[in-house]
Image (cartoon, rainbow, N blue to C red):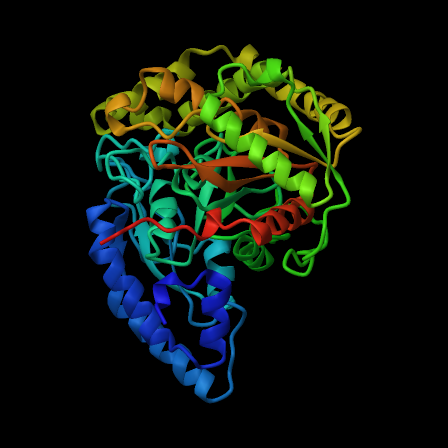
Length: 466
């Protein structure tokens, strides 16, 4: 049995029964992060001594009949912006290179309470400000399907490490597509949840009113398990929803789909590459075979909403970093400094307009879009995953501008979406679609993604890492 080939749900079950020890699984993941992970530039740091001690304790506790939760003894590594007391957390930056956390993020605490073992920190775009995964200080994280291609960002290391089978699952953050884009580029499943579903305390912010914490894993079932653990109200973050916690795993079905899925008319797919369109069409046919009704849906307001998201993002990010921009501008890479400085010069009236329109636009979008459909199927990345050579500085060119075309508005609207592997383009890189739902409709999104993954094997494909 190849331990690193097991997905999160499988590994957790085998550790719980004692068929695999936490020590063996943890050692394999640590070794992989320090070898393949360094080669892919997805590993920032590993915590070998502490992780192995925790794994030994997990095994010892199991031998005594003590199981600490659904992730007991499972090794995981995460995007380098989740604080754990005593650890350095740089958020991919030079500015915070010496920042040592004094608290532990709620998400990290909940994972630990469920028995997970935190074994390392992973590559990310500087302050989460590049959808391609570019980092001017750390360089590009490399796509495990082909090292010359981007991973997408900003949760670049999380996607690459999960896709390369170095770890079974990871947490990232999503402000305009930063979970879904790298998940799509690397051929794994990623969830951007409803805005207030998961606590964000102890997570380095980019744009607090848009940021979401989300899981990246190989399957919808794995993402459901992680949401079971980390989602729900938390006293440490008063902005989390107080809606009752639900079981996303329990909502996964195994049968047909008695629902309607909205797809875009041809005019709204202008600019989407023909290879991606063919993969989307295959996905639509698969859903029809599962019993879903396919209905055309209109999202013509997406371009306007994308621009509103952009305004909110750069203004909030600039406000967070204003003092450092003034005192130590040289500590920012040029592309990040340039984007942040843009936010300093946008008028306060622009921010007020974008925020005051948000509730009305979200309500109107949900009412109109989901009046006749249960979920919306959108492209994730609208073109084949591009090579690094097309995007050398992380900011110029059409890649950065267009890669967020179908992801950015989702954050402004505050609604949930999942990126689901759906095929491969001629360059050998993965392609994915998004499933989008109403607020707090993660159960339906994951159930539909799970049904799709029961009849396809795109999420099971693995890169030929040597």
